[in-house]
Length: 117
Image 1 (cartoon, one colour):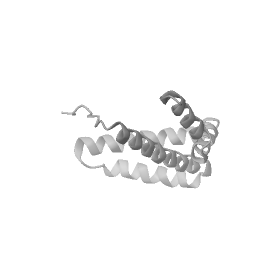
Image 2 (cartoon, one colour):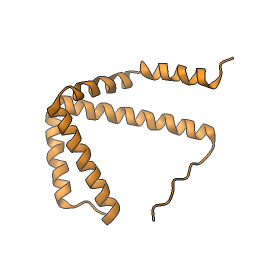
Image 3 (spheres, rainbow, N blue to C red):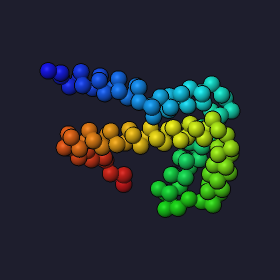
Image 4 (cartoon, rainbow, N blue to C red):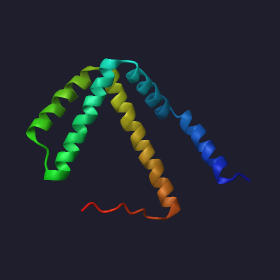
């Protein structure tokens, strides 16, 4: 009979060989080897964070931030390497969220985050 750690290692092996994980890993490696693409992804993250912060603080995203997002989004779509990375990351994030939901549901404990007052 396998213990829980053996099963987790088996899941880790499955994840390591999953096509979505492989795509994400390869896209990440390509981005890290290309300074221009890496900067574009970093800029995208920074603008995403700005938009999120504005949304939380004011309830809306400023026109200036929206324009930045649109401009950079257009540039990303024209760069196959960055576009591929963003797509691979989104697919992996969805899979990871699904896995965490399954695990949380199995545990049966609702983890409560501290309130932000």
